Length: 278
Image (cartoon, rainbow, N blue to C red):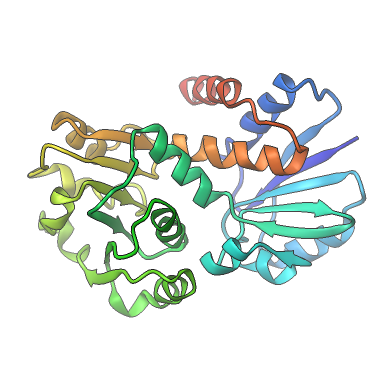
């Protein structure tokens, strides 16, 4: 009986089971199972060691994405460059670590109409910001502006940029947001990717000065829409949500784990029904 799971801690909020089980149903894979497992960094190694051959793949969320690179038998070049893996699949008895967050972000942006952005801004310095640099590289952007809260804590971001061969301009631009001060570059971008936590970008909506073009991808999806997304949409900006990214990264995981073409439409329907029911 093929099995898969999403691991992380905490994990009760995860929508991954909704997405993967919907995919199995649409693909007519009645024997496949998918569950959520609370697993922190101390439990990942013994958990992997205990899995039998029925286990085909794992989705990984925080705090496991960096540790997966150490525990996998093989790591994709993209996951190694980003510095994080959100997926592990079994290949000939060995665990292969991959990153579908980057592809999920690219798919969500392309679905929103993004083709060749020129002036891109990223908010945040964490793992999702590192994935954003890789996504922008795929879209042809090699010198984005990255606004962070603390330049001293941007070391991992700088290291990932070096591995990805991109040259972001990194500057402090988040600290003053609580007082309503927003770097004007945010509003002038043609692509804005916000990777900061819930509430951290709300100041974008306080005194908006959006240009008449652009796309916002806000990785926050609960609650949705965010104030920043509502504000940008009012000025005619195209909006992609964290739900869109979640959908597309899961679709790529389904493809890796099952070898089948992911049923994106069925997964999207199940996702939005689950969100509406919360």
